[in-house]
Image (tube, rainbow, N blue to C red; front, side, top):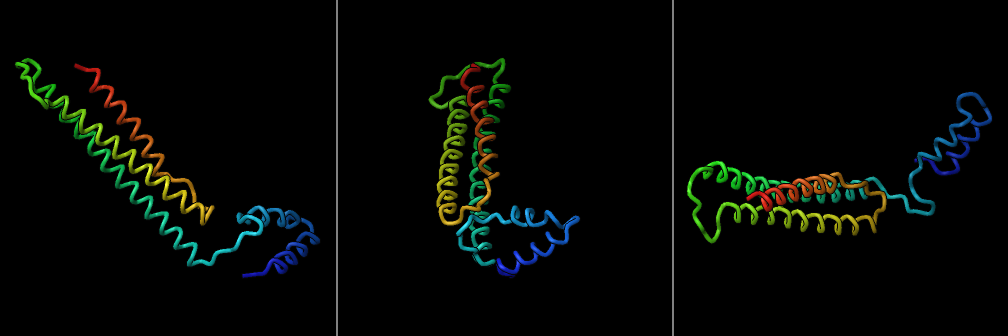
Length: 160
């Protein structure tokens, strides 16, 4: 890897030449994303941070899959028994289809909340050591699934 002095000499050379290379020093400076005074990490350390971040993303996606399964299963049970018992008699039970659906959807939303909190805390700890960690797309997906779950919960609660 070239030292800072060598890069500066190359930039000065091209800026004296004029023409299309005159502004290349600015582009090179903008491409440098590390903070001034920050320690440059070697490739294996950067890759280990990326592996750790991807493991966190994978774990978050597992939480999202679990929550989505619980939410959709609860809503499916509710809709199935709603269609099945349309004209039939209503039997009073301690835990009917509606209560079961509410319980499953709530468990799904709570599991999504727990997974998201764990994910955010893990990424904060990782960002404290390596600030160049990108934003989590899995957390965005978790937010969208939670909105879907809340809408389903509202639909089950307010439809008798």
